[in-house]
Image 1 (cartoon, rainbow, N blue to C red):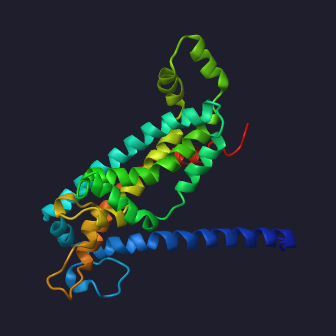
Image 2: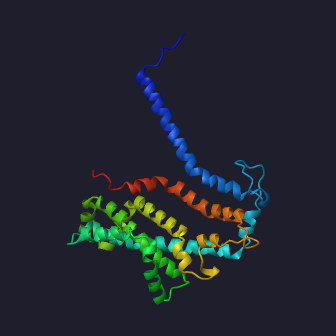
Image 3: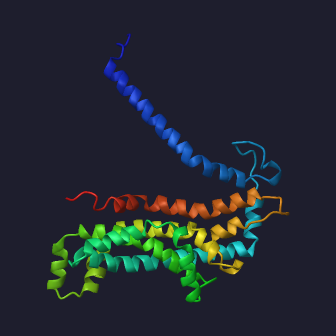
Length: 285
C-alpha cells in the first residue's frame, strides 16, 4: 500500500530532528577530533608524522616509550599530582567552612563579601602575576611546590566558595536546628550533618579545582626553575628534539594524551555529580 504523503507539520518536525542531530554531530566532531588526532599522531612513527592520514595503519608505541624513559617527565607527573590534590584538599576545607559562614550565618555585609569573592575570580592570571611573584619570593616559596599550591588555591577558592555557599543555602534549616538541639557544635554540624549532603557540590568543585591545577601553565612556568619542581604542562612545553630546529610532535602528543586520559576518566565517572552540583541552587524549591 502507498503511504500517505507527509503533511507540513510532519515535514517541519522531521527537518527539526535532522537539524538537531546534524548540529550534535558537528559539535561532537569539533570537540573530539583534536583529541582523536592527537591520539593517532602519538601512535605514529617519526617517519609518518607529516603524512596526512586520519586512520592508523599500524601501532607504534615508541613515542610513549621515549617520554616515560625521561625521569623529568615522570617527576613532573608526580609534582602535578601532589600539587593538584593539595589544592583540592585546601580549597574544599576552606570552602566548606566559608560556605557555612556565608550560607547559614546572618551578618551585615554578607552579600558584599559574596560579590568580592565573585569579583576576585574574574581577575586574569597575568594581571596579578607580578604581584604574586613578589609574594611568593618574599615567602621563600619560589621553585617550591608550596608556591604553586598557594597561587592555585587563590584562583580556585573563590569558585569553590561560591558553589558551596549556593548549595549550602538550599539545605533545610530544620537539619541545623535539630543538630543544635542535640548539642552539636558548628564543626560537628558541618562534618556530620551537612557534609554527607554536599557530595555533589564537593565533587563538582573538587574536580574543577583539580583540572585547573593540573592544566595550569603560566604560574608553573613563572614560579619554577628546575626540572625537579616543574609540573606536567611545563614539562610538555619543554620537550625538545634532536636539534633546535626539530619539534618532536610525536612525543609531545604522547605526553599530552598521557596527561589528558586521567581527566577524561574522572569526568566520565563524576559527570552526574558535576551536573547536579553545578545546577544546585539554580532553582528554589
